[in-house]
Amino acid sequence: MTASNPASVVPSIHDRFAVVRERIRSTCVAAGRDLASVILTAVSKTQPDEALEAALATGQRVFGENRVQEAQAHWADRRAAFPDLELRLIGPLQTNKAVEAVQLFDVIETLDREKLAAALAAAMQKTGRRPRILVQVNTGAEPQKAGVLPDDADALIASARDGHGLTVEGLMCIPPADEAPEPHFKLLAEIAARNGLSVLSMGMSGDYEAAISCGATHVRVGSALFGERISPLKPS
Ligand SMILES: *Cc1c(COP(=O)(O)O)cnc(C)c1O
Image (cartoon, rainbow, N blue to C red):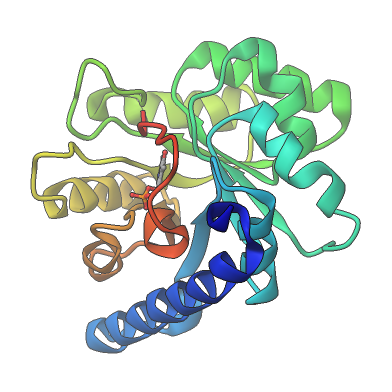
């Protein structure tokens, strides 16, 4: 039963958070960036309760989740105890889950099509909640990956903002697994700059330092904080 014994899990998560925070700090120093300009989003998908509790105990309050239902199970009841939680949806969203997503999340990072912008606007109307929005860009134009194509990003940003009245604050990307990530991070930063957007969610366990050097304001880190996931979900 060692795997589910909190005593065996808690210290290592505590140490891993300390290591990642230190690396973020030293990367900010090297890049001449203010430490407060980079937010660590802890990706808690597939993690057991004791791992969530261990992360909260380190002071972590910003969490990323891939799926609406799993996020509800993880966080709905914890909100009362941690009013300063910030929940960020980083996985693909179906229009029929828009209401649930708007009710739970503070930020939805995966807007990638017109139809979803319309569904989110309707869900906000219905619930009175207004999560902030990031547009996901498929910087590598990978056929199997979610995200708007780079050439179509400006139009989607404009229609989400001006047509649907969404609060679009930035962009998110997941570079192709088999390529150097920097050109993708730089492309995302360029698209954000020409659209007047300040938030850049980019960088995961393997490349968050590179992302910070390219201007990331939010890094989404899972396995470097929690260890390898037991049933990994592929980012999409
Ligand atoms: C799972 C996931 C992450 C975290 O990945 P790690 O490599 O474990 O850090 C980040 N972003 C998205 C969109 C993900 O799905």
